[in-house]
Image 1 (cartoon, helix red, strand yellow):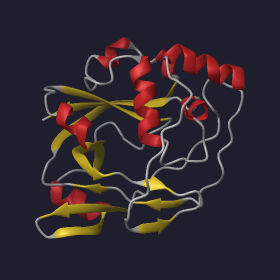
Image 2 (image 1 turned 120 degrees about the vertical axis):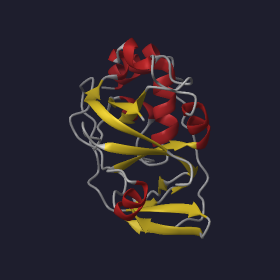
Image 3 (image 1 turned 180 degrees about the vertical axis):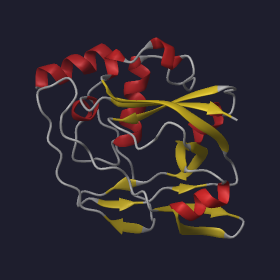
Length: 210
């Protein structure tokens, strides 16, 4: 398994150093998913837990607070949210008709649903005891689009070049995708190494921007 993981890392050009993120003072919500297992396949058969789907931190003209995701979606007139780190959101704004979004392993995004794409002002993460610290987003800045395609559990080194054409400028190759996934998800799964994360593969969501 280690040899296979190292091969994927080498193919993507990712160094085996792990990014460390400093803890930040944020609202805590307890979640205790099952410990994931990594198997000797190109894409692991076990599945990681998804981030909290019911609550999210926001900052707006009324300050910073925790709200229900359903309430925020109703306020924005969408079915669900797609969150981008602030530098990614800044480059995302230059995209016109389509946007390809990548998640680790799987996604809850669905074809036919409308999504608000908005910036993360402060990142969320998980502690070693699986406590999730919620991210904080800014709903005053968002764009809306409709999902027309979802593909689950794609090996990183097998992502089609057609998807990179409408991805963020910083994600135009498998190597850049691997780096982005590690940066996004290492704080959420501190118990996993870089190669264990990449063995999960990725989910691809295509959004038609309005």
